[in-house]
Image (cartoon, rainbow, N blue to C red):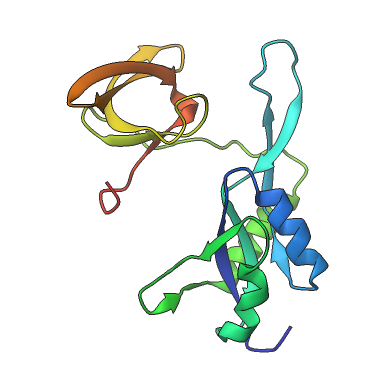
Length: 174
């Protein structure tokens, strides 16, 4: 890769992180998929599974030139490079190096939401049959469960889900 290459966050299709990572690597483009290990959610087994640290994202090294970014964006499962109206925004090199160091240690990372939800906070359901559904946080139910108030055709319904499957939506995106 050229000397002026920078790291970018590449948004992928849902559950396509490994596919995108493999295919971009085969194109001889430097890429990084930080992973963590966490217990499987299946009740019938107690396995530690490897999952992306940032679901939906892979980091790639490229220049700002569109000709260098095109092979990345044409990869199956790739959606877009994160950025703003001026174009893709690079991720600082020191943050990538920190992530590489953090994910290289043998100990399992403890991941999850450290943000305390307050009644009325906008949230989105991440996994399960209602994945992608947006609503407002209503209350903690206990044992890692929460109730989300969802607007369905002008009526509100309460949906009970695992706290780990809910993510607060930043005010800018809600």
